[in-house]
Image 1: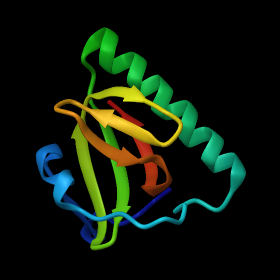
Image 2: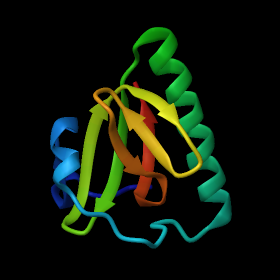
Image 3: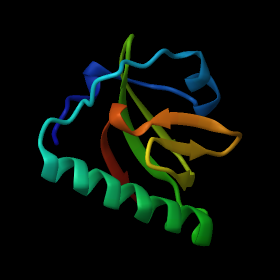
Image 4: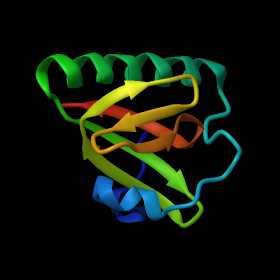
Amino acid sequence: MNIPFSKTSTIEKENITSLAFGNHDVLRDEQLKIQRTRKLKRAEKLGNAYKSKTKILFRSMKGLYRVETTVWATTEQYVSLKGGVLIPIHCIKSVDFY
């Protein structure tokens, strides 16, 4: 998914708690939703085993944001980051590793 970086803002994970999120999934295609879930589970494994960081692109009510962080846990509805910060999975557009 190629989204111009100029249309996204980088955010520190500690500031995510100040954002409001919508109720609708940002992905419409079921295959993309399955792929997103698989990538989040992999990010969780990499984060816990190797402390690897993950790039997450997500939408809040204010716009698109990207965060580079360690994924600690993934539930059916949320991704948990270090410090207890939660991002609703339905708001995540893409997940990348490095």
